[in-house]
Image 1 (cartoon, one colour):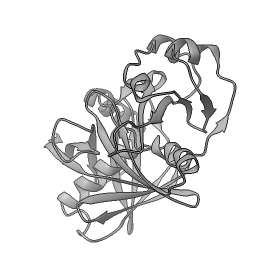
Image 2 (image 1 turned 180 degrees about the vertical axis):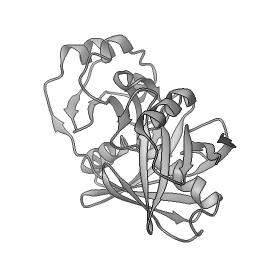
Image 3 (image 1 turned 30 degrees about the vertical axis):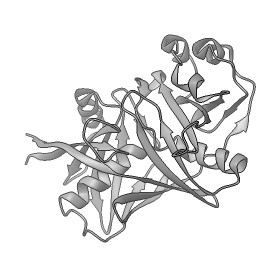
Image 4 (image 1 turned 90 degrees about the vertical axis):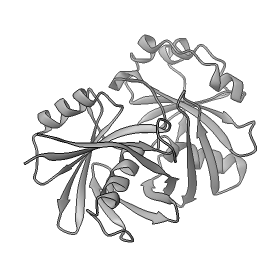
Length: 262
């Protein structure tokens, strides 16, 4: 049987912006090597694979090179595709079972909200490859269980970064978040995300990075609800809400095309 396939732009309300993810809706369990080959063929930062498990759904994410433990934009894309195709009723919360535990997705007006675990950061000594790869002055460097977090002095410093991806790929980590406060009153903070070690030099909009950014900026700005802008060439907006050890990620999504593997 053909396997339904969608490409969805996440964390945006218009095509050709935000972060594109592929979504495969599976009827049965598939081999991990096949899923990895599909992700390499799609050549997007992530491809999501969804399979029903009773009243819940299994969700797995693959970059073109590896399976990952957590991905926000592909989860948003998967939920959008499932509601669009009536795989789940329009007002039903979707419960995804993943390598990072149970991740609910629900609708809130025009937005999709994802309930993700917070990934707090701890200050650390920056490795030489990180400093060489970014070549920018930092005011704070820390590490989560997934990524490095680097704070710089200004939005301009974030936007003008031209990393040495080969150097950053030497770091034994999923990715590198670079952030500052935003100069634009629409947003509280701005960021970019680099993950050359897993085959993604720069990710357009990274939901899971905001599981670190939200509590970090919440502590410094004294607010639990904020809006972040990821300043890639495509750009994307992520609404965040900190609730204890969880982060609610809010965003929109739009389908760019649909087809099937035959």
